[in-house]
Length: 402
Image 1 (cartoon, one colour):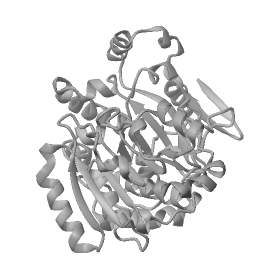
Image 2: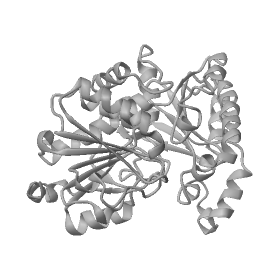
Image 3: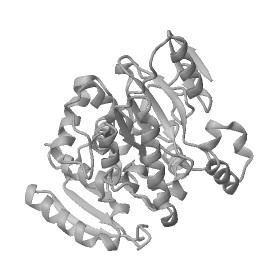
Image 4: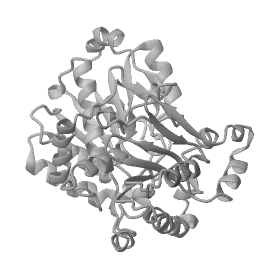
């Protein structure tokens, strides 16, 4: 399906890619997709966004349907200086996480690289679980290089986005973190990079609690030593259950700020949070329930549960019409792009910006952090799922919870 909107077009849904190819052929223009994001179906709510009738299927039926398909574009989006696309494989998030599916997921990534190379793609962004499943891009880097594709996990830009969402919450709520405790749940690529970026700021929390699974003790202890040597912030360690869930007496339930970037679903109990907690979650799947968080936020107004990982990209004429659960996704489209995708968009604007393979170096995170302002990208209003957080209503009461 093609939609014509405000002097530009977007090609939407399973038939959109074919329609785009037909138009390129009719205009005698070689089909070119400058930046492609490799995403995936996250849960039972995602596949019906492509096929509305799939909402009547069970989870198992949806998975069988998805597995019978080929990798497909859910949208082709023309921007001011580039054309970009969002590609999804025939596997959903839970299946990608399954050990038995790991090699198949790797094979799908390589096949997808071959596919997009036919359309002169310059940059591929590994979104969601694709980054972790490819060892942060390292397992398919050689393949991408042979095809002349710059590969990135987008984790430098995602780190910037998580930090700026936290920063926006601090500013919108008129808070001062200097006397507060922050807990970071998950010290993988995003969590560790966020901590490094945070500790380079003038405004920092009084205490930082590093939280991860017991089998990651050595890494967490090394990070704690690094952070203690580079700042005067008090650093504490804590470990979850082996499955990645917080213990009932976790310091996270007594922290002003709770940043999470993990892959354990609902690891954080919303009811256990102290009043006055600001949450910022970049987890796949979600680290805490959006419905429970919104209920508490709207009824008691004593927590601020923020989604992150999305960037306002209107500065490059980016408007998407795919029905993601963004507040702005209406007849006028949405200028919001995923942060990992935004890294590819920014690299297209400035080829000197580095690709992120492996864990992002703090020097590269800082380069994207500066480029974010230089190009005019922005963090959208704070939200929990598709709902905007009523910051104006909450701000006045929030300080009494300190």
